[in-house]
Image (cartoon, rainbow, N blue to C red; front, side, top):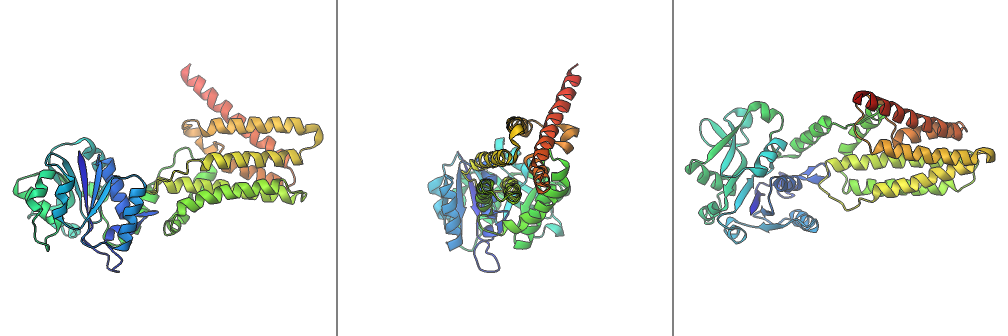
Length: 398
C-alpha cells in the first residue's frame, strides 16, 4: 500500500492554524496536497499536526465527507499503527506539493529517493542538506523508516528526521533544475501572498480549448478577473451552480408573463446571466478541490433554458409562422447540442457557436422587437458552422 504523510507543523503568522489552511483557489493548501498525493497513488492520507486547531478539524471532516481515507495524528509515535514496513510512504513537507511532471513520475515509480535543488540563496526557505543541495520537502521512502524516527525528541521536525535518515543511508537524490523550478515543478507556499501569486499564475496559464471570439476576447477576460475574488468567498462554486439554475427558473417564469416586449427581454437577460454563471461554475471547477456531486447543474439549466426559449418563441411568433418557428427552434437546439459535444474545430473555433453567443443574439434581436430574426440568425449560424466543418472533414479525407 502507498501512504502519504503531510506535515502541518508550521503555523501561519496570524495564529489561525497551520499554513496548510491558507486559501488556495476555492479550497486550501491541505486539499491541494491531498489531491496531489492521490494523483501519486496514495491510498491513505495521514495529516501530522502537533496542535488540533478548529479549522484543521473542519478540513479533516470535509475530507472524510468526500470519502477520502484520511487520519490525523499529533506525533511520530502514532505513525506505526497505520503503516506496514513494506508500504511506500510519500512525504510532503509544510506547504509543499509537486507540479504535474513530478506527480506523474511518482505515480508509478518505486524505490526510495528525495527531491533536491541546487544550494542557492533563492531557495533559502528549503532545508539545506550539504554544500550542494537543498531538500525540496518531497520524498518517496519505505514506511520501515518510521521506526527509526518514532522516538525522536519533540523539538525535532518530522521532515528533518526523515531527511536525516534518508541522507545517512545515501538515499538517491532527484535534482530539480532551476528552469523547472521557474515552471513550478515544486511549490512551497508559506504565506498568503505566495498562495495568491501561485493561484494567479495558474489562472493566467490556463488554456481553454474551443473558444470563439466572444469567449476569448470578452467573456474569459472578465471571468479571469472575477475568479480570484470568488475564490475568497466560501462555497463560491456551489453558489454559482445554484445561481445558474435560479436564473433559468426566473427566465422561465418571465417567459409566461405577458408584458408585451418587456417579458421576453427580461427572460432572455436572465437566461444569458444563467449561462454565464454556469460557465463560471465550470471554470471554477477546473481548480476546485470541492468535488461536488452536483453534476445535474448543466442538464437542469439546459432543460429550463430550452423550455424558456421555446415559450418565448411560441408566445411571440405570428400564427402563420408558428409551426415553422417551433421546427426551426428544435433544429437550432439539436445543432447546438451537436456543436457543443463535438471535438476541437481547429481554426474554425473562433466562430464556433455556443450557448452564450446564441443567447446574446436572441437578446439583441428581442430588444429590437425582432425575436424571430434572432431565431433565424442563430439557426443559420449553427447550420452554416456544421456544414463548413463537415465539408472540411470530407475534404481532408479525400
